Amino acid sequence: MTLRLLPIAFACALAITTGAVAQERSLPDIGSSAGSLLSPVKQAEYGAMVLAQLRHEGYVLDDPLLDGWLNDVGQRLAAASNKPQQSFTFFLLRERQINAFATLGGYIAVNSGLVLAADHEDEVAGVLAHEISHVTQQHVLRGAEKAQRESLPILLATLGAIIAAQKAGGNSSGDAASAALMTGMGLLQQRQIDYTRDNEAEADRIGIRTLANAGYDPAAMAEFFVTLQSVVRMNQGDERSAVPGYLQTHPLTLARISEARERAAKLTPAVHASTSSTPGSNPLLPPGLQLSLPTQTRAGVGDTGDFAWARERLRVLSAPTPAQAIREYQQLRTKKPLDDASRYGLAIAHQQANEPAQALQELTPLLQAHPSSLWLQIAIGEAEAHTGKITEAERRFETLLARMPTHRALALTYARLLGERNTREAGLRAVAVLRPLLGNTAADLPFQQAYARANEIAGDPARAGEAWAEAAYLSGRPEQALVQLNNLKKNQTLDYYARARIDARIAAITPTVLELHRQGVRDEEVRGGKLGFDAKFTPR
View 1 (cartoon, rainbow, N blue to C red):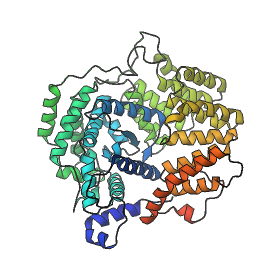
View 2 (cartoon, rainbow, N blue to C red):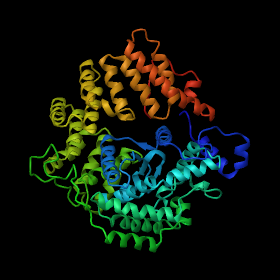
View 3 (cartoon, helix red, strand yellow):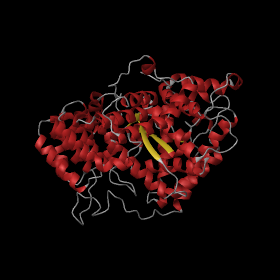
View 4 (cartoon, rainbow, N blue to C red):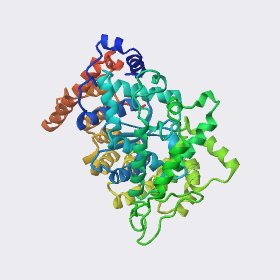
């Protein structure tokens, strides 16, 4: 692995605990004291860099269906916040510790464990609303400004703290949810940069109002506080699941829970037309037909109708291995019969374990019970393709795409299946399937990977090379992206437009690479000369 972040975490700890030494060694410019708030553009750059480096370390869980669900919930809350013009990016982390945090530029991360611990979507929305409020009230920005005044490098501090917190296995709460910004488990002893109690109270107050405005249950935040409090109590005395350091200094108090309940009692959720649960809004549903939720699943007040499917899919994709996910469902089955969402999760686990026949066996009756579920339609299409039922799978995806040509998860899944065929005809069709998404994919890693593969087998090496380079950049490997683009320029068959696109990306990526070099962060594969002309990004 290259471009490791453990040295960054160490540098962060060193900078915090021995500030004089850090100043003496003249840490690089990034995040140095400027005496003024960072511009929105700079904030977005820092947020994007944090996301890319977390991807490089393997923390980010990129899945089109899950991304779509989380983004729908997050953007719905953002639109109902006190600053709807603020841009937000929501992403999932693989870790099963209960945690979430906001960083610069409106980038908000949610650990898998937080979703798995929630009873319904409103509780996840409560955490997101709290984090959104930290951003809109500039609590995150003030923390970064404090780092500037103390000459603490913003990017290094943020990454080091997040990684330290994730590796420590700390759990989170409403207080601890945002603690990863500049504060990690091993970095709390001196000069900690954390949110004050006033910040937390403000984020609670505004977040609860945001919940209600978005049509979610405003009491869900207090409900999840109680869940987190129970987790903390269960973990006491267990060194492997120790109470996070931030909770030890900023505990969840009964007063905070009571205040959240009192505020929620004064609010009524606004009526929200969900794109998933509103009659007629789902292209798979005939007009007037209601969407059915999975059996034995508790729905929240503002539930999109996708939470149960999302939680079980996340349970599988966050498991260490598909075999362990299958065992997890087998253990659940010994306690009580699996509900429909859990059976879907088991089917996905079989798919991940390369057992498509078993997946299809689980999915077929589920689709009969929930014919309108796109999650099931996509899953059964994948299972059909992997059991040799190519014609059936193709018919299913083509029918769905005819109704929803811009649905990201649907298009990406179908394009990936087409890419597995490895024929020029399939590549050309995959390119056509992905083309409607091209307008908003600059920062979309799964799209760039699918688009690269589609163009590769379709016989367009220039487009494929550009997309592979973009995938490397989005995965925290900007130096590899730069090398790939410079190598691609040597191709004499490039036309004027391709060469202009490549030159523009080289100009945009070069400053990032130079900044990382100034911090002593280099890509070992590039330095070792392992990248040749035909090098392309290979996801972890």
